[in-house]
Length: 104
Image (cartoon, rainbow, N blue to C red; front, side, top):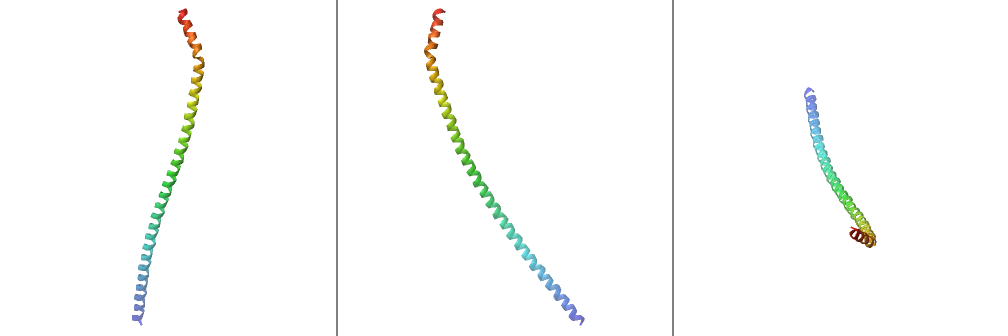
């Protein structure tokens, strides 16, 4: 009878060791799958972030070009106004200079 009890204990220990080994293998598999999924999610997030950055930079470049065009047009318009104003005053300035030179 003692021999049967020893066999049962040995069998139970063997069964427990087998279950522990199986649990360890399952845990390794779960960890490996989680790491793989994490790497994939990280790569996807990086790719998504990179695409978002490119999109925002492209929109910013477009807006910058639009604003630069507006500023350039305003500057050209202002320069033309100043040229027109100066041209209108040229005769008066020339007459003033001539008068100063003559009067000396």
